[in-house]
Length: 142
Image 1 (cartoon, one colour):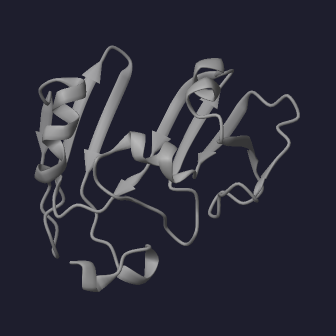
Image 2 (cartoon, helix red, strand yellow):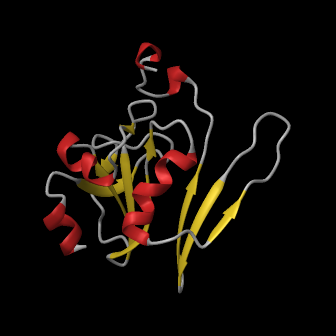
Protein backbone atom coordinates (compact mmCIF):
# COMPACT_ATOMS: atom_id res chain seq x y z
CA UNK A 1 0.00 0.00 0.00
CA UNK A 2 2.80 2.41 0.82
CA UNK A 3 4.45 1.76 -2.58
CA UNK A 4 1.12 2.41 -4.28
CA UNK A 5 0.60 5.73 -2.46
CA UNK A 6 4.18 6.77 -3.27
CA UNK A 7 3.66 6.01 -6.99
CA UNK A 8 0.13 7.49 -7.15
CA UNK A 9 0.11 10.31 -4.57
CA UNK A 10 -3.02 11.99 -5.98
CA UNK A 11 -5.12 8.82 -5.59
CA UNK A 12 -7.81 8.63 -2.94
CA UNK A 13 -8.69 5.49 -0.97
CA UNK A 14 -11.62 4.49 1.18
CA UNK A 15 -14.76 2.39 1.27
CA UNK A 16 -17.24 2.92 -1.60
CA UNK A 17 -20.58 4.34 -0.50
CA UNK A 18 -22.12 2.96 -3.72
CA UNK A 19 -20.33 0.06 -5.49
CA UNK A 20 -21.77 1.09 -8.89
CA UNK A 21 -20.57 4.71 -8.75
CA UNK A 22 -17.03 4.99 -7.49
CA UNK A 23 -15.06 8.19 -7.72
CA UNK A 24 -13.10 10.40 -5.31
CA UNK A 25 -16.35 11.89 -3.97
CA UNK A 26 -18.03 8.56 -3.19
CA UNK A 27 -15.25 7.02 -1.08
CA UNK A 28 -15.61 7.51 2.65
CA UNK A 29 -13.15 7.18 5.52
CA UNK A 30 -11.93 3.56 5.60
CA UNK A 31 -12.40 3.30 9.38
CA UNK A 32 -9.71 0.59 9.69
CA UNK A 33 -11.41 -1.67 7.14
CA UNK A 34 -9.46 -4.63 5.80
CA UNK A 35 -10.81 -3.80 2.32
CA UNK A 36 -9.91 -0.53 0.58
CA UNK A 37 -10.81 0.77 -2.85
CA UNK A 38 -8.52 3.36 -4.40
CA UNK A 39 -9.42 5.72 -7.20
CA UNK A 40 -6.78 6.98 -9.62
CA UNK A 41 -8.26 9.85 -11.59
CA UNK A 42 -5.38 12.24 -12.13
CA UNK A 43 -4.76 12.20 -15.94
CA UNK A 44 -0.97 11.97 -15.57
CA UNK A 45 -1.23 9.05 -13.13
CA UNK A 46 -3.93 7.32 -15.22
CA UNK A 47 -1.70 7.45 -18.31
CA UNK A 48 0.82 5.16 -16.54
CA UNK A 49 -1.55 2.21 -17.07
CA UNK A 50 -1.73 2.19 -20.86
CA UNK A 51 -0.57 3.90 -24.02
CA UNK A 52 -4.23 3.75 -25.08
CA UNK A 53 -6.78 6.25 -23.79
CA UNK A 54 -8.11 5.00 -20.42
CA UNK A 55 -11.88 5.46 -20.27
CA UNK A 56 -14.23 6.46 -17.49
CA UNK A 57 -17.77 5.05 -17.42
CA UNK A 58 -20.53 7.30 -16.10
CA UNK A 59 -18.00 9.67 -14.49
CA UNK A 60 -16.67 6.84 -12.36
CA UNK A 61 -13.02 6.50 -11.54
CA UNK A 62 -10.96 5.52 -14.63
CA UNK A 63 -8.64 3.20 -12.65
CA UNK A 64 -9.89 1.30 -9.60
CA UNK A 65 -7.48 -0.58 -7.36
CA UNK A 66 -8.61 -2.86 -4.55
CA UNK A 67 -6.54 -3.78 -1.51
CA UNK A 68 -7.15 -6.39 1.17
CA UNK A 69 -5.10 -5.97 4.33
CA UNK A 70 -2.93 -3.44 2.47
CA UNK A 71 -2.03 -5.95 -0.26
CA UNK A 72 -3.05 -5.55 -3.88
CA UNK A 73 -6.16 -7.62 -4.58
CA UNK A 74 -7.48 -6.37 -7.91
CA UNK A 75 -7.23 -3.58 -10.43
CA UNK A 76 -9.52 -2.60 -13.27
CA UNK A 77 -9.64 -0.12 -16.13
CA UNK A 78 -10.95 0.08 -19.71
CA UNK A 79 -9.09 1.42 -22.72
CA UNK A 80 -10.32 2.75 -26.04
CA UNK A 81 -8.99 0.12 -28.44
CA UNK A 82 -10.50 -1.59 -31.47
CA UNK A 83 -9.73 -5.13 -30.28
CA UNK A 84 -7.90 -7.26 -27.73
CA UNK A 85 -5.28 -7.94 -30.38
CA UNK A 86 -4.36 -4.25 -30.58
CA UNK A 87 -3.69 -4.11 -26.83
CA UNK A 88 -1.83 -7.43 -26.47
CA UNK A 89 1.62 -6.19 -27.64
CA UNK A 90 1.67 -3.56 -24.89
CA UNK A 91 0.84 -6.19 -22.25
CA UNK A 92 3.33 -8.73 -23.66
CA UNK A 93 6.15 -6.19 -23.25
CA UNK A 94 5.39 -6.05 -19.53
CA UNK A 95 4.06 -9.54 -18.71
CA UNK A 96 5.62 -11.77 -21.39
CA UNK A 97 3.83 -14.10 -23.80
CA UNK A 98 0.14 -14.90 -23.28
CA UNK A 99 -0.43 -18.12 -21.36
CA UNK A 100 -3.96 -18.83 -22.59
CA UNK A 101 -6.37 -17.45 -25.20
CA UNK A 102 -10.10 -18.11 -25.22
CA UNK A 103 -12.84 -17.00 -27.63
CA UNK A 104 -16.25 -18.32 -26.57
CA UNK A 105 -18.93 -17.82 -29.21
CA UNK A 106 -21.97 -15.72 -28.50
CA UNK A 107 -25.07 -14.94 -30.54
CA UNK A 108 -24.01 -11.35 -31.21
CA UNK A 109 -20.22 -10.99 -31.32
CA UNK A 110 -17.27 -13.15 -30.31
CA UNK A 111 -15.74 -12.18 -26.98
CA UNK A 112 -12.01 -12.72 -26.75
CA UNK A 113 -9.94 -13.16 -23.60
CA UNK A 114 -6.20 -13.35 -23.02
CA UNK A 115 -4.80 -14.63 -19.72
CA UNK A 116 -1.45 -14.53 -17.97
CA UNK A 117 -1.11 -16.80 -14.91
CA UNK A 118 1.63 -16.45 -12.30
CA UNK A 119 1.11 -18.69 -9.24
CA UNK A 120 -2.05 -17.35 -7.61
CA UNK A 121 -2.14 -14.18 -9.71
CA UNK A 122 -4.13 -13.94 -12.94
CA UNK A 123 -4.11 -11.07 -15.39
CA UNK A 124 -7.13 -11.12 -17.69
CA UNK A 125 -7.53 -8.98 -20.78
CA UNK A 126 -10.96 -9.07 -22.37
CA UNK A 127 -12.91 -7.36 -25.08
CA UNK A 128 -16.22 -5.61 -24.40
CA UNK A 129 -18.59 -3.94 -26.82
CA UNK A 130 -19.19 -0.41 -25.54
CA UNK A 131 -21.87 2.17 -26.17
CA UNK A 132 -20.62 5.71 -26.74
CA UNK A 133 -22.99 7.23 -24.20
CA UNK A 134 -21.65 5.03 -21.38
CA UNK A 135 -18.09 6.23 -21.78
CA UNK A 136 -16.31 9.47 -22.43
CA UNK A 137 -15.75 8.61 -26.10
CA UNK A 138 -16.46 11.04 -28.90
CA UNK A 139 -17.79 9.02 -31.90
CA UNK A 140 -16.20 11.57 -34.25
CA UNK A 141 -12.74 10.47 -32.98
CA UNK A 142 -13.22 7.01 -34.45
